[in-house]
Length: 75
Image (cartoon, rainbow, N blue to C red; front, side):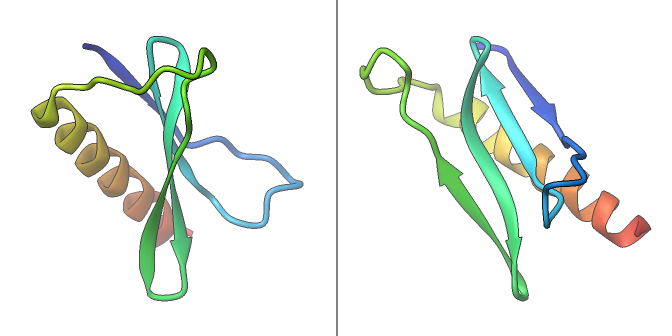
């Protein structure tokens, strides 16, 4: 299963986040909170549960965290 990671920038947004999309749908968002990163998981639009290979999920989250930390450190 393929995933995409976006670090959207919006002037309305208070914090930079990393969004993980699977099958064109937002699956999770990583948000910096205080001294840690939090993960917010989104439901599928059709109401069915996500079924994602665990290695893909861990890889996507790890990559998103690294990209987000890199951007936060650059600012």
